[in-house]
Length: 259
Ligand SMILES: Cc1cc2nc3c(=O)[nH]c(=O)nc-3n(C[C@H](O)[C@H](O)[C@H](O)COP(=O)(O)OP(=O)(O)OC[C@H]3O[C@@H](n4cnc5c(N)ncnc54)[C@H](O)[C@@H]3O)c2cc1C
Ligand code: FES
Image 1 (cartoon, rainbow, N blue to C red):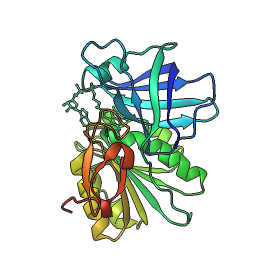
Image 2: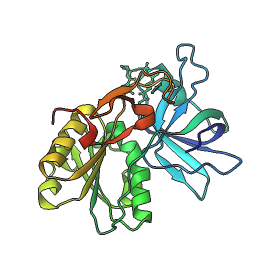
Image 3: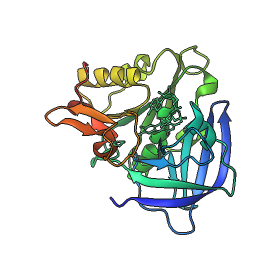
Image 4: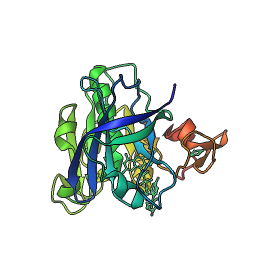
């Protein structure tokens, strides 16, 4: 898939939470085709300590408005600086990168999309694309507390949304893997992105129940293009591969995780 480096213009910067912003960007020409699970490398201007671009998942593509959305969690100088962009600013974006989620061909199959923390970001675009293709996706979103659940009304546009919070302030108390939906319904495919312990627990559940499962890895990245080798993951039968190029999405059968 062809990659582009473009200066995109900020149309909105919405503060969703004390630590998260949603930035929406557009271009004067049509945005390229993108797949859910792919990501962008965003150049961070005006940060004296951030020299490398930062990898950020494609949160959503609004075809009608020719907009791409990024959900940004402020964790360090780079993301804090990105979170300060204002309407009208230009942001330099290298995209779309990596290989995204595979979409099932049989629309009678049931897909569960599990996201935790900022790992919910790619699930919105995936859910919308599944819905457009005739699926009825379910979302299972986990957070520490009700205030940490983001974009719920957006997710509700594309499927049924189940929630867990660690403090029980919304949905079921606990982790996503303890939600009752997992024992009450059966799924053919699980897609997941979030903190590694969560993805490992989801992968274990999927493996034990014979469910196909794809995870989106968030290994540290620099170039995003397969050149610097800083993002490698040891993959079954293939050895070390660059997550930025061969992933970030992998079927759990390919991973060497102890699950
Ligand atoms: C494929 C991919 C998609 C991503 N999608 C998103 C997204 O949609 N939204 C979002 O907010 N973030 C996303 N991230 C994580 C994001 O890239 C990092 O949080 C960011 O690079 C940190 O940059 P910084 O300069 O703010 O922090 P730094 O000062 O570089 O680091 C601050 C802290 O964050 C940790 N950190 C840095 N990179 C990562 C990482 N990849 N995973 C976990 N911890 C990290 C560091 O170890 C350090 O503790 C994604 C990462 C990858 C690889
Ligand atoms: S980030 Fe450079 S090879 Fe993957």
